[in-house]
Amino acid sequence: MIEEIWERIRSCEGETFKQIKGGEFYYTIKSNQLHLSRTNRIISKGIIEQALVHVPFENTVPLQNLQAPSYIFAILMDKRIRKNDW
Image (cartoon, rainbow, N blue to C red; front, top):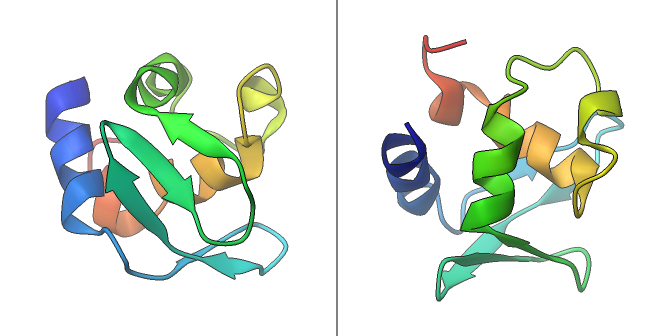
């Protein structure tokens, strides 16, 4: 599953995503890492894979042990990424 989702994430590189509280951001991808526009945090492909175990999310609580939970939530719950999978 991670490869299919990662490809969706790659295809949306540079596009705008919105966090729960309305903050907008985009990301670039370098070496299987998402570099976020609004923070110095980096989200690795491995972290995305760990987060996928918990989809769908109602909030960021299941992601609190991962790097940049609000960004992961925004990416994985976006209709461009999740499609009809969750």
